[in-house]
Image (cartoon, rainbow, N blue to C red):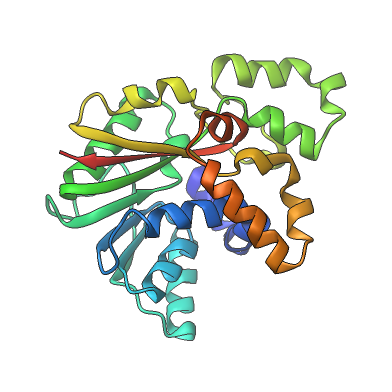
Length: 264
């Protein structure tokens, strides 16, 4: 189901981070300010490679892996056209990284898979795999969609849903589960995370928490308005937002949050 969705939406996924520029720029900022340049990075579940190619262009050695064959085909075409070279690209499931030996990467980006995995068992399996392939003292970025993200999403996309879909909105918020493709646009998310419970997902591995940040932060509801500003003005607002991104205010205002940890 997940692979089929992404196979059908490759171009949409490539462009998505243009609209969701706060998510992209905030995450990229923390990646390059946490992972030393030149590091060998696995971008698992990296889609068509927006992060991979930008990082590769900045001197990182990046291997892109994704569940969607069409995403990987797109990435290989883009690599040829752009001249930006990746370490490699393969179709791969985040719960099965047997193609890589232990301690293969200096850092792992897992910025999508965990909110598509339906059970605690599968999420634990994913975490154990990215932990296994990360070097000792290596850095892991893992993204989550929060259990209150649907509230923000419905307000922005369909504010009248409070009249005819309040039960759906509250089901998503209260349970953290999307069992019936209830999200706008049929984007299937299985697991919405409570920020207070994220750390427990890493109980089975020896990872030291470095920090958590909110991707959209305090500008979540103003993202499209900020995008309309002149670049110099927008960038000033972005810089201010980045300075708040690790605060509880930013984390609880965001739809996407990222847990950053270091392998012990």
